[in-house]
Length: 237
Image (cartoon, rainbow, N blue to C red; front, side):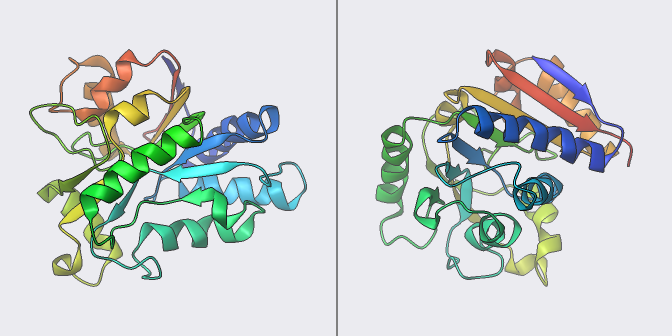
């Protein structure tokens, strides 16, 4: 495990983008596991800036996203497909057909879960997985539980997660209560994992996840067992 302390959010974003860009430069056809939420936005903005300067080429890269809300169309402004298009995909030369986000509107959600796991295997697995962390220790939408969920699955979102995500909606009642998320097994099978955390409010959960016992009650604690984990954090705000 490598832990990097950033000066502030801008420094965190630049350091994370450096690691991702190096991955793509060294292996242009990398499969990138990508995350949504407020923390990665600065990282994506930096990658776009370097792409526009000609420093990085995504033309043969592929991506698989961690999760998606259940019941929301991909063109909905709150969907994670819309988020990725807005904050990254529409601004770089990655081919849309090479960007994968699970469908929360699938007729058969269980079949969608299986198909997403099959897809990850078909593209050769994830070379680098970008993660954020929730206040309750969730990664993707893998919420605290009695056991680690291994494969892509449907999850009931916890109250902490719903409250945290309410800022993106007009009211907390509009926040979906379910999501489809990549499982712990797929995340842990990534060749490299990059975890980013920003804000004073994330310091406690980062400490528990990285220094406490490995337990499904704090899903991110499983990352302690990964052979190539880099953590970048800033607790300045």
